[in-house]
Image 1 (cartoon, rainbow, N blue to C red):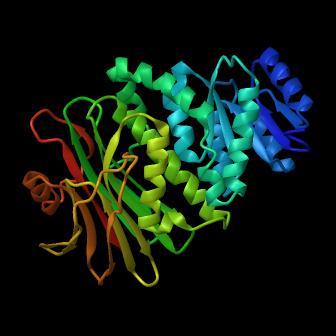
Image 2 (image 1 turned 30 degrees about the horizontal axis):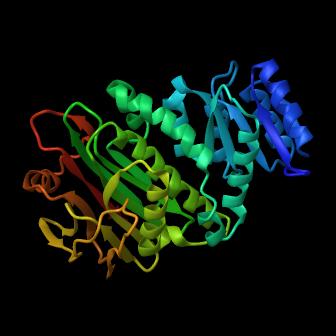
Length: 369
């Protein structure tokens, strides 16, 4: 059977739905352990080995998000799938940020969608890159598109979703410090920044600008972050190291954006740094973003040619460059607006800011200790 001998932890507070889903999974060959809330789910996770977690987010005692936060804080890379209602999109966004692999919207019209999502989730963890790219999860995108329709109609909901993804204006990693400002006109920001450690030796950072500049940008941020998170996990599981190769990563992200069918396009600069050698690898798609090395009060722009935006089926090659990061140099990604460059040099790092008086865009700075 499709889920033969698969150990599943099912965490769901609705006893009727939990029993129905558990029975279905067992008929498909899975071994299912049930928990009625996040606290019990966390206790079971510590005591027993599981292959995957299915978790509701809105539960008493301990919600699913808190449970997952504790699980992933422990260093676990176990795949998880979120079960959530449409109204819980902000929590779904946070779960994806923490490391969840996928989510399904309740109520489920067909329990086979759960089986399909489980197989796709495990395939992405254990398959080769070629097999993964040939098996895009169409059901997941169907669920995502249903939420996209809601976000397109409700700007406040879209802003709420996006705000869950943005950290404070200052972020500390081992040996890395990040500062940023993004400015938007009291609506969803078409710009997005993100960063992550990859193991102990590598660090990645990127800045993106989505087109068209509407509520879909909030949705695109969720997608982009989830795609990158998956590749960070693949690297942790020693499956591939695409995430630290900017050129290959942009090719991968383009394929995923095209497959999503959202008619979104993206300018992006993606950076990977090897912490010991301080070697920088940089790739760019589109135009409108700039990459600089900052040394004191001097900015030196790195030559990256304009290229085609991501999101195009007939996409070409990104522009790329490798550099050695000198002592006391910082790396800066900035929108091509002089005001933003001046704010960067004045160290006006404010995080995500809603302001009608300044052109939209911003900047992010990476300092290596």
